[in-house]
Image (cartoon, rainbow over all chains, first blue to last red; front, side, top):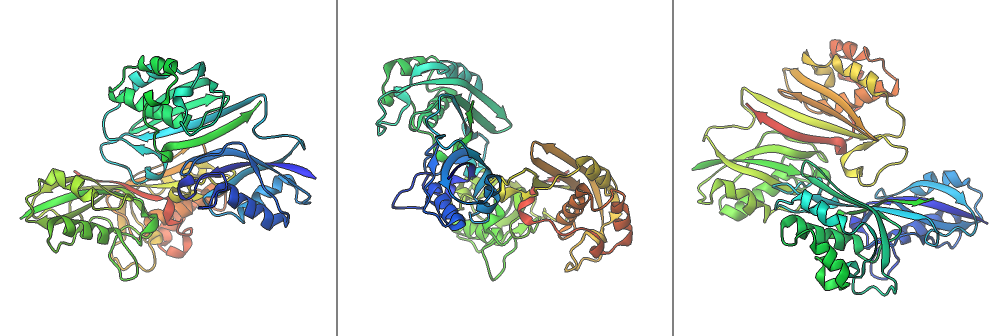
Length: 246
Length: 246
């Protein structure tokens, strides 16, 4: 029995997120089907990050156990022949039999939130960004973002439907860059609460628009109430770019 | 009667190109429908560039004549309410009643051909690039491209189905850039033959792969036979980025 780790990229537009559910096709389900088709075994992958409906990934991670004799490094190629073009196994490799993609001491996840901030929408960026026509003050957004870096209780930035008990997380880096009309909020940390990156994006957009002062971020953090933060920014702007195990 | 010029951007993936045809939905047809819905007039647009099935645009141009009292600059907004999200009117403005988007003395069209040249395909670039896994030598491609710049008879780079008589065109600029796995062939000129940019891309890919020497481009130009050039590169990599009237 071997444990195989897959690094998975996908365009989430046409999927109901990662996790298997009764009412729609998910990434997890497509991976399970491809692996069963390849190995003939009743396999279910274990994923690192259960991305939401419409959210994209360049480096989500999943593992599964198999008796298959196919060399682990060749599995990516064989699986890609059995997956639709909007899901790609970027890499496959053998890991220790007890290696788990979520329970690791040293994880660093990186997400990017993309905003297309032009006078008119760009149809070539529609699937992969949130469109905002009004001007955003990047400098103010950066000032606000600075309050979020470090270890904090992010209860205000967690979807109310979430049931996690501990809402303390560490954001190691949070940068905001602009290239022409494309704004990228890039955030790295040891873990993120449900909807946390999209709520951070929605709140920073309010700061960029001038509805909130940058120092409002400090206040929102301290109040620990979801209702004080901005709206959850739409899923199409979000990409899970990397999960680093170190 | 006013003549209105539209600058149009679209994701061509789900359309059978620009020009109206019996067997599929086209960009031209969607624009006509939206304008008819807005003005109540039986209008047909005249387009600058009849892009092929699957080809994208950021700045195609079309005109139409209308009696509508809607201010010309506001038409873009009103039309975008009536168009699907993958077609966007970026700008609308009044032009002289005899202004024609194709018959102008000073036109400069710019196209980009995008290649995703990574170890694995990137699902977020699948709709907007051609995927090539083998290494490409950009320097050799640039050497080859240099032979194409200037005024030449591009008969070798024209689809055999084309019926144009004159195949002399001027390429003013042809650059090849690489940023990470993304290679962009950017070409500007006063006009392009049917499939010309995609045949140039296909031929330069052969040079980058090492099948052709860079000097082969000179030979192909001189022979004036379509069969000597490379294959027509796939449509999803092509974007008509700008049409400049000066």
